[in-house]
Image (cartoon, rainbow, N blue to C red; front, side, top):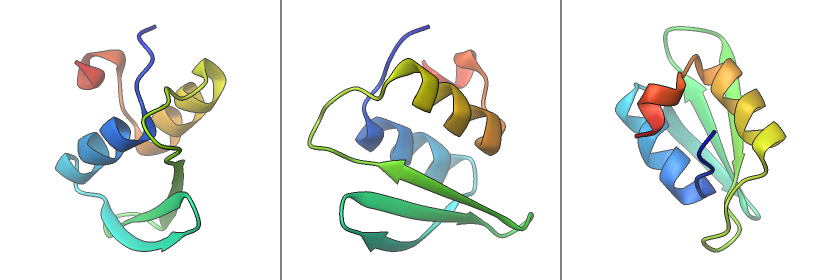
Amino acid sequence: MKSISGKQLCKIVEQKGWVLRRITGSHHIYENPEQEQILSIPVHRNKDLKVGTLKTLMKIAQLSEDDLL
């Protein structure tokens, strides 16, 4: 699996309909208006997310590996 930064993941989830509600420290909190779900993406400079963190966020946001390209 290709690892991406939190900043890149934020752009992808915004394209998928997630809305940025607030920024708390280095975490961007997104909400999906269609579902009652919240997604917290850590944005630490331009560092890549750890694979386990990325997989969990992708599962919550219902993203596939193809969406990351």
